[in-house]
Image 1 (cartoon, rainbow, N blue to C red):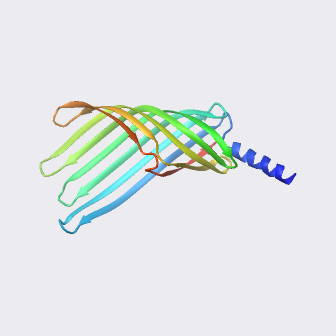
Image 2 (cartoon, rainbow, N blue to C red; image 1 turned 60 degrees about the horizontal axis):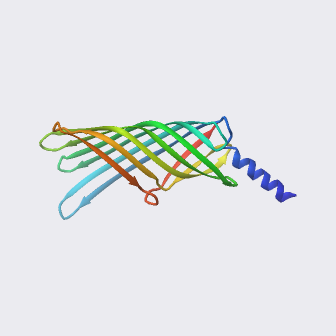
Length: 198
C-alpha cells in the first residue's frame, strides 16, 4: 500500500507542471567573458558574450503548449590593435512544444520555433567603421529535459538542437546577398534554463 501511495504522489508531482490551461514562463540567460593573449605576437583580445532567450506560452492540451519567444544576443571582441567586432542578433517568433512525462519529476519536451531574425555586424579598424545588416527568418528544433523542483517551477536542460535561417544581407559596400544556413549542435553545447507554470 505504501508503494502505491508513493507512486501516486510521484505521478501527481510529475503532472503538476503539465496542466491544461496553465501559463508557461521560461528563459535562458548566457554570459561569457574571456581574455586571450599570445606571448609570441603580443596579440591580445577580449570577448564578451551575452544571450537572453525568454518564452511565454499557453498550455492548451496536456502535452501541447504554444506561445511566443525571443532571442537577444550580443557578442563583442576588442583587440589590442584597436580593432573591434560586434555581432548583435534579435529574433522574435512563435513556438510549439510537445512534452511527455518520463516518470517522477522528469519530463522530456521538444520546441519548434519559427520567426523573424535580424543580425547586425559592426567592424571597426584603423581605416573606419563598417556595418553589415541582415534580416530574414529562422526555424529551430530544440529537445530538452525538464525537472520539476516544486509546484511547476523547475530547470530545463538542453544539449543543442537544429537551426535553419535564411537572411537577406546588406553590406557596407552597398552590395547585397543572401545567406542560408543549417546548423546542428547536438551534443556540442549545454544550456540550463528555468521555467514556471502558473
